[in-house]
Length: 146
Image 1 (cartoon, rainbow, N blue to C red):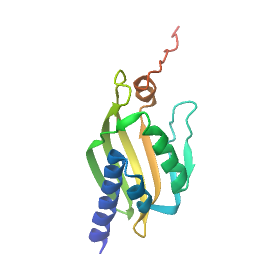
Image 2: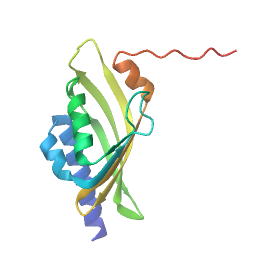
Image 3: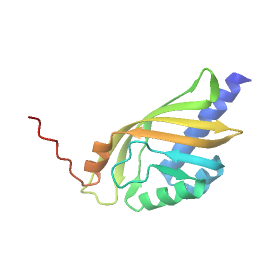
């Protein structure tokens, strides 16, 4: 049973990532638990770090989809914790196609999804904030080292 549960949970996360790539908001909503939480602990300044509830995350993703044609998430690797098949670890890369074709954003991600009763309850996403800032047209000035 544990091996089957591991595979089912990994498949759910895989489908969720596919939903992000397709901006399938209805499909993604079906995969999220009512008490779902999304966290991006190292979000860029001015960005929200925590979203509570499926609606909050999907509203955020809808707003992002106005700037991004597709996130092109790829090179997906998934595994579960040995101690808990409901904890799914994921790594993947993005190579986003932006609405403004003068911009280019690509990044690498390390994520953790919590799955309970066939629904995603938590999604933690870690990425290089500097690449996000410059990919969306911002700049970063390194501190002067003396």
